[in-house]
Amino acid sequence: MSLYSGFIYFFGILSIFLGIMVITRKNAIHSAVYLIFCILSIAGLFFLLQAEFIAGIQIIVYAGGIMVIYVFTILLIKLEVVKGLKRRWEIKLITAIVFSALSGEILYLLLRKREALLPEEYGIAKGTVQAVGSYLLRDYLIPFEVVSLLLLVAMIGAIMLSRKKV
Amino acid sequence: MIPIGYYLILSGILFTLGIIAFFIKKDLITMFMSIEIMLNSANLAFIAFSRNLLSINGQIVVFFIITLAAAEACLGLAIILLIFRQRKTIRSEEINLMKG
Amino acid sequence: MELFLLFIIVGLLTLGMLFIGAILGPKKISKVKLEPFECGSPLLQKEIGPFSIKYYMVALLFLIFDIEVAFLFPWALVFKRIKLTAFIVILAYFLVLIVGFIYAWKKGAFEWEE
Image 1: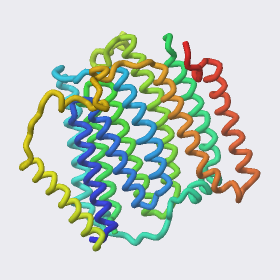
Image 2: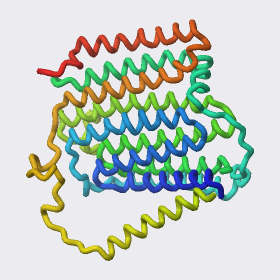
Image 3: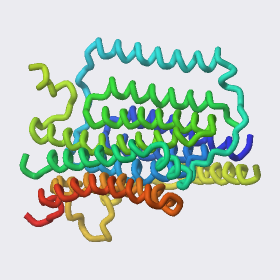
Image 4: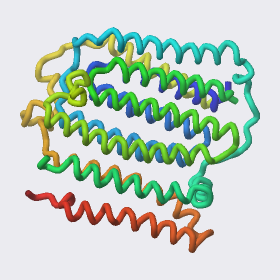
């Protein structure tokens, strides 16, 4: 096992562990902090998969921007620890069905489709900032412009929704 | 080298965790966080395929998804805060305004 | 491989030291020890109180401008190669976003005192 594979297994197992911690905590601020570390470990996986720019964006925007907003909201709401309040049985049934379907799919991939698990030869497709930029301005010009519209909508909506007087 | 199936399994496990959390959690903020986990698992699958197929396109899609997640978190959390200020609760079962 | 071994050894060493410290060390927990540390002075407030919604709008606008600037990094590195196209693209990009900026300004999102 090389150093590279070791780090990939490490970050993968760490992200699964942190994801389980996120969904089992009772207190919302604890799960927010665990989610920050889960996102950081996924950023580590991106870095090892040679998507360096995306890993940086993941850390800057996800861990540094989006999760800060989450923590802000939790602190503003002063969330009490939600407990009790039994779920209805339909929701439990849906959860059980979705859970068994998804884990069945994973097990099928593990057991039957062995050829999907064989290692393949990798070439070099480094996701440096320059490579991403050249693709972005050659093939993705229209989405790049539409993103500005999306951000405009988000900005106007955020100002409208969070004014002091509702 | 790690085969791509392992990344897909990791992505599936994270997606399953997100779905479970979305169904069993009772407050809106944690349900929103589970959506973030699901988006991240989809991003991981995109990046793994981008590496496997030697193409940058998957990474650009992930870039757009991260932008979408930022806009979604911005608007969604503002709406959740508005709900809390008007109704003093963010439990998903007590917000039944849409039932008429 | 040697580097990987180093990580394993240092990690195990750290865990072992923490474990030994937790087992052998004396545990005296008093009320004063459990309080958050504020430079030795008595606590000003018990917990994180509710704060103004003004900070929240600043955080939301920060997130939008953050992702907006993130799109400039790949653009800046290919600007030298495709000068005119890149300039027109970024002009249209900012033309749309300036509208939002002016809207935020007019609505008083950047003004602090009230």
